[in-house]
Length: 267
Image (cartoon, rainbow, N blue to C red; front, side, top):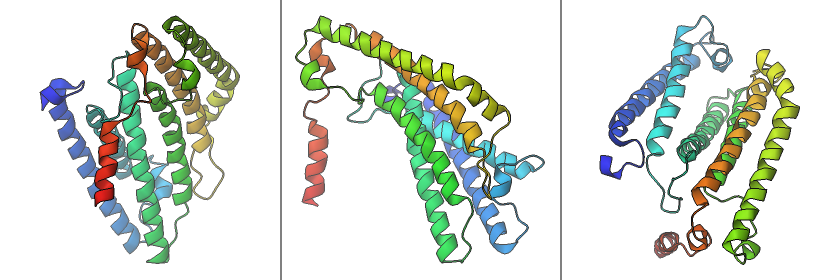
């Protein structure tokens, strides 16, 4: 297993065991909390999940959820997809881990929506939090997807023009792009830092019945992740600097993807 490891090496198996353990704890606590919620009106609900003070079971649940997401993301980032770039930049592993977190969050949105549908149409007990929690999670999916797109060189680039340039001109274009990204990042942090800090320090809430601290969490996250995107862009420059134009081509025919499509059509 270690020889197939991308970067974890000997830590891959312990991380896998930790991921299974955290996920099992989350599953058990989730079943227990849902069961209590169905049987008792005074049971712990989602309102208490964002206000865990004085409730050890809620704190354990939140810790287990965070541990499960991080360990699963670490384990999944140790495998490269068939159409993914080989990570060779100094910041690539961080972006890969963040991309796996985004992937897990998509699954969480599906689970939340499934729970809402069952609760609403089977038990006639619609939730007050499913829509807002989905928006909360989706905001991080959107932000982390941008970082992953930068690492995979999947951001917008006019390859019809770029591929016609000699390598020295491509490098000049990359430097100009990096300058624009860093200028935008500096402007965003300069203009939004004070507002983000105010929202974070008072943990500004959404002003609804569930009242989650979406503005207090998402606004600082925007600034942090856009800095990650800028760091990834810098990492790309160092990684690609000595590569030839042929090694930078990303619009070549992907034989693996074509084969997968062919198998799907045959079925």
